[in-house]
Length: 315
Image (cartoon, rainbow, N blue to C red; front, side, top):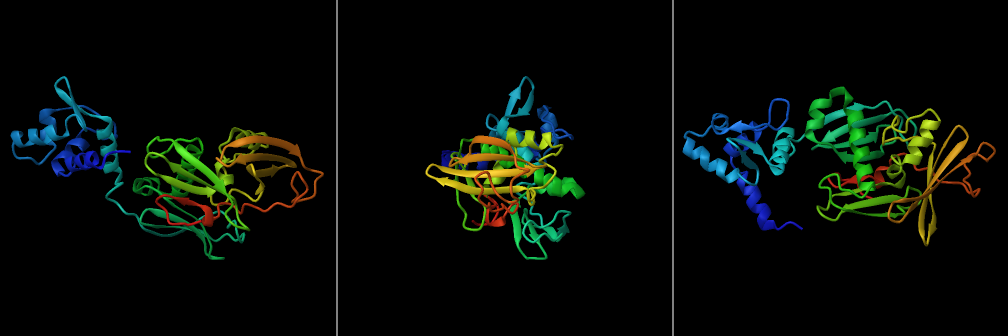
């Protein structure tokens, strides 16, 4: 765990416009880190004298900036701060009116889904049944740069976040992730909770969503001439089912069916897939699982179980 005193010193160093201008000047117009001379950096700031500028540069040196020959460049910490400033991570708050989505509501089936943004958090909800499907944060720079492609970008962003958390690596800081699955009520999907042991970043989502990037799932959809990424997180398709099949040891069975074939994945308490099976189910009664018991649908991405650490949805 980082020492708060060290963090206080690090952020105090940044509390000056000339110093932030130095960091921005060490990134070129294409967003790539670059080297600048003392005089070039001095001209990029509003400091009156070279002596005053030299003082500011000394405060940045070693932690955010390093000298290489007769020029200066960003350290890793400096690059991270410069990117955050450029992206508006700590300075911008995006709000937007509802935007209609092309996908059907996973709860009522109506084509009435819309995405609304409030303080950088995107909520996908159904105007017909009034239910929220998911509520997750998206960086300000994403809203500024993707335009009409924003829904796809939002979907891709969070698929990668879920995949990284599922692989045990925090997408925020690279720290080790602890995972646990649990029942989220009846009816409703089982839920996986991921928590970073280093920075505390947290994500909750239906167990089904944690399996979408698994090689067995990708291969299964490919073999049926489908792409598992074609449907967004807010409605992954009604072919998916999940249910808790054992409590000791804990196991969630997640299954999907295409063209008369079923792929079943068995997910342990720590959200890892411990086994997967493919079977022909064309002669099986509609809606029955491998043991002949009716399963409960996952209902897409149920907002009652989808929560990122910057969102406000609750289990």
